[in-house]
Amino acid sequence: MCRASLLSLLAAEEAMSSADGIEDHSSTLVNIGACMADLEHIGTTAEQVKKGEIRKISPYFVPRILNSLPAGYVAMKYKMLRGVESTSTACAASSLYRKRTSHSETWLCKTSAGRNASSGHWRRSQISRPFDNKRSGFVLSEGVGLLLMERLEDAQKRGANILAEVLGYGISSDAYHISSPDPSGIGAQLSMQRAIEDAKLKLENINYVNAHATSTPAGDSVEAGAIRNRFSANQHSIAVSSIKGHIGHLLGAAGSVETIATIGCIRYRKLPANLNLEQRCAYFHSYIS
Image (cartoon, rainbow, N blue to C red):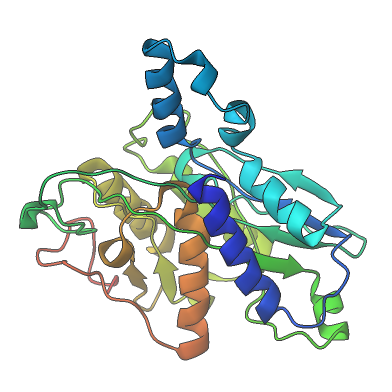
């Protein structure tokens, strides 16, 4: 079993434990996003092929490298029969939200994990520092974030411990470059605009944005500019921070883990600092703290 599947099973166990009162999981759909397959296993198998050690190749090689495997293992363990989905949209893999349906259904969704190899020693200039003028790239990390989602009326009916409510969701794309964001920030602006409209909120109702900010020169500037443009009509300052400086970049799991962190912000009324921020990005105006 690959590491991503192991971590997903551990996270699922925690999620199931915290969601008291659900005994029958037959109506639960599993959606586990993944950024990439088990690269370590692919590399090991490639070396075996090069050495002519064909008979040493595992018969489970193909299923093990499928992005949907973690979701499959979780579904098998808990007999979740509604279906298995796996999105693969790079850093947004765990952020795709399934719209509510008219029938009773629960979703165990939004996660990814993987082993990231690194070598050498980190210099201070290489430390993840979102929105800092000296940022020079992100630091890879690994992890899983799982959320159990269900219709509000169903959760209330069974007396669930409701941690948060998803009011709205927005999705977009830059349609610009394979890795660089559109300098105009149109994609990020559209996502925020659509989420706000879907939630039927006003700008003044929003006082915190948990940013994706990965500590890359282009990405952070574009995102900061998009937030500035989207909330420039606000009459009050808005707090913005990224937890990448604390935990690194989890790639496909970034969205789910940061969603959980934001839920913690709401529950405990505390905001994470922009760790390693020393010289603030010029794109931040005075109304952004």
